[in-house]
Image (cartoon, rainbow, N blue to C red):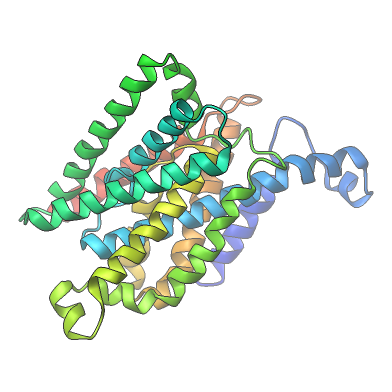
Length: 314
């Protein structure tokens, strides 16, 4: 795909996202300044579009950062325990602070995600795997343990069913006034781009990074903190969406290389485009009802994940 075609595809998906929905919105009504059409756009469609784009950008950037830190192509928040840790943090907030707002829940999700990521990186550095496929497998097992703990305490407190429904990735409840916390992803993207060169060097390994004058521990800590903020903001807003941070960075690296200074804009655009396409598909499959995006993105991402593993083994 040419450089001009990629932005055009993204813009086309944005327009389609604004037009697809249970309530039909005609451009003639929008141009005629119809109150009902503009209310639908401003209260629901535009917030949903913004949340989709920011979530796709944030999760794909998270994948890039984690892959550089762990030096493995198959790592992202869903395969390193980050999403499950954030879910556990939100559950702790709901049980310990039942009257807490979104900010408190996000802070606890951030702390749990950051701590779990540090433990995961320590485990991977401690165990030297000859087969790179084992690295995400360990992450999936680690995340399963965290998820089991969360579901056990949810069951003990009789909120298991509501927790599972709330944390499944879904944009249908995004309306004006309850999604703005996801805008935290914007400064995260800016910081990641400013440190793109350092994260590229980080992917060369601790020895090489240190010899080039990079503070390895500080850069790793910064990267994990950026990931934790992004994951906690997305989980508290729309729930868990797997594999976005795995699929997009791998496809971009396959065709454009590993220089993050050049590829980060493509990764961000690709992540947003993938989530837009999955969301539109979910809205059309059983129209006028919706399939949660966690299912569509998980299905597509899982297939691509298996294809990448098979390609790596070959």
